Amino acid sequence: MAQEILEPLVRERVLPRIDEESDIDEDGPYVVILYNDDYHDMMQVASQLQKATGYHFDRCVQIMMEAHTRGRAIAYTGNSEDCERAANILRQIGLQVETDKF
Image 1 (cartoon, helix red, strand yellow):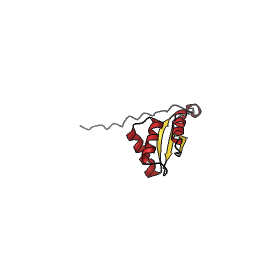
Image 2 (cartoon, helix red, strand yellow):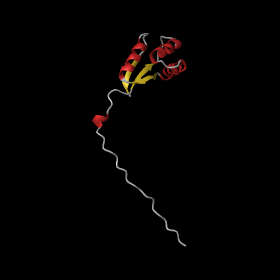
Image 3 (cartoon, helix red, strand yellow):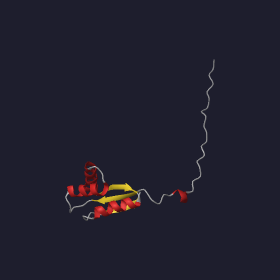
């Protein structure tokens, strides 16, 4: 008895047409990039990060260490207004930060 080999069923998938102009979200996500700082001690930076972001202190230490070892780190992610607020709090003690659209 010979077995018949069937071809796999392949269905073409048609992707919906996307209007690129209308799908761009102008309000995010944005990021706050923290640069390495040689003028403040590490605990000052981590404390200011906690003040700016509301993150748990351990997470702020991780962000600070990434900026220290790699030269920069994403310190916060959110909408434009929240990122500017966080960046301004970090700038209060003279930390170098920038906001950018992700």
